[in-house]
Image (tube, rainbow, N blue to C red; front, side, top):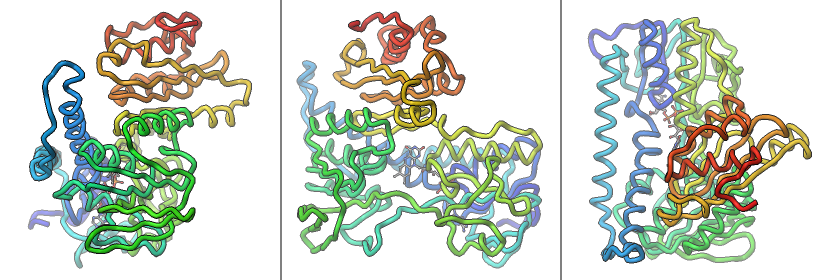
Length: 461
Ligand SMILES: Cc1cc2nc3c(=O)[nH]c(=O)nc-3n(C[C@H](O)[C@H](O)[C@H](O)COP(=O)(O)OP(=O)(O)OC[C@H]3O[C@@H](n4cnc5c(N)ncnc54)[C@H](O)[C@@H]3O)c2cc1C
């Protein structure tokens, strides 16, 4: 806090992560005065310990695979090893540049950053290290932390993504507990860096929240890459020594490795922050809100990972923008959770938006849902890149496309168009006449819609 920091604001925000800072930027753009309380670094998990550093590691991993596989393309390259010090300094350089940019943006929008640990002490008051600040509106965006399992202590060789991101060495053998987004991304990185990796997932599939076709496709691809996984089996215990970890599963399997990454999900950071004392309803730590993200108490809203639903940065951004506009009286449209794009950046990538086939059948009826899979085997650019995979469309009979599901290298880049199709409730017949540039992977989306509209081009009937 500087001398000139005011004590009261139109909008006072607790937490400067994706949700909190997006709300701050939009609110100030709308002419409101904004205070943003942050105890660590503005940018939050996504910028400092999440999206950005993991994607930098995944890019380094892709380069390692390219070096290893160069000969296949007539390029005489060899992978001589991974220098984690340099990988980490490249990764940190990306974070630092973005962080400087974000700090500049926050300053130029005249958002008052209040440094320190904040606590809600009244329906319009947050106390930060003994000082009280008030807001005509309060936004809670305190984010999440890496969860563990009951009795499973993090420490030493048992780590979460927080420690994994700072590792100065590549494990020879790694166990990844959890086959969700964070688990499969780290498994992918470590495999590309040369580790022997085993994923353990209690549910029947890797990427268990995705359409089953994507989960099975990812499993096939991981098998081909030599990434080991055990699904449908639960973790029992771990012992660690100076030499490594010994992990026991409930089916009696014993696995040994240098480290075990615990990637079993993220818990909301809401304990001891005064939320419940102010009458805010909390369920298993998550802050309950209505569809307008209002908590039901005073003018208090919540955004980001503390609100039940997909824990994704772009959801946080959009929720932050939504709440700022709501406060400014712009009556924004509520966010449709199913239309939030989801990308898992492992190799191959997994990208989806809208309903899975199973969910669509639940919602519209078994015989009212039609699906189509377009194989990337028929897509020129995917062949050039040497990737396999597919685009799966889910449509309501004679109705709109309600789900797009993709697997393959770089398919995450195609999620933008997929999102427009699903959000705008386009029919395949609307998309089929739109032109997709050749040769791009984007054509696969176009071809899938051509096929579903009954006029397949590069596809066998
Ligand atoms: C390894 C990893 C990879 C990820 N990859 C992706 C990805 O590729 N794409 C994607 O969309 N999402 C990804 N995510 C998820 C994404 O990071 C989160 O969804 C997003 O950061 C949530 O934003 P938030 O604002 O809710 O919380 P956070 O970003 O966690 O921010 C909360 C902020 O509040 C501050 N804070 C908390 N309590 C207090 C307090 N009492 N006083 C003051 N300040 C406080 C914290 O210091 C923090 O800065 C990833 C997450 C992880 C861990």
